[in-house]
Length: 337
Image (cartoon, rainbow, N blue to C red; front, side, top):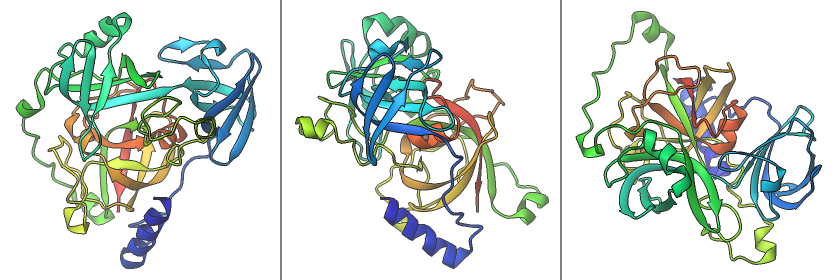
């Protein structure tokens, strides 16, 4: 996927110029993702796509496994994401068996939901454990078909358990969503500057469908397979909800977004600024992100009043721009062209 994206960017740059297709770039960030090979109170050994990393724990290292946790939450075979201190040898924060479910509730049976993320993705079963049902219910009071759902949580024995809602559910099903407001007029200065600048929010998604041993992510369950990270685990880029059908992406269903997003194609790059931290990246569009268009929400992280989702970043790109997965989002400014 990275090779196809790079080829498309080079073609766009040749036709439209480098400004219209900036080269991929992210802020330097010491991030590690992989499968736990060994863990002690002071050391974490992780199999990554590049080989094997040994990371040290210190007294200030924090852990998240559905909620704040300790080193005892980490097990051999777990999928982990680690933000390291500068230098890359000491773990600052560790997310264990992290997952997210975002989309429209398609069905419900007891404490289990079926979530439709759109654009041809397989529907995901989500368990809402009783101990977290009150917390989920505060921001998602209607767990019935047609209503939106967005929560982070953990993988447990091949099932995704939602533990923390990361947005407030609209009080209506998707088919009753109000029409989006008319597009704002661009000022003369904006037209002269060229390109399109939009403010909104970004969330994250995991390009690995079901990471970790025993999950239904296409792994055969053998010991060798469990220690081999999924090739998509380190994917960088964004799932974007407004793909151009004329460029061969008519398979991307496009619900109407409350933002007037410019059309882009797979491989197009855009500039994104985290308005909370000031970090800036040039990211490629790597796949359809139709689910983002359903959400006309705001982000409580350094809330600047911006409403509506610009894109869903891959987990690693979201972290590289300073996002915290358990927060679910950050406010951002996008520049296209």
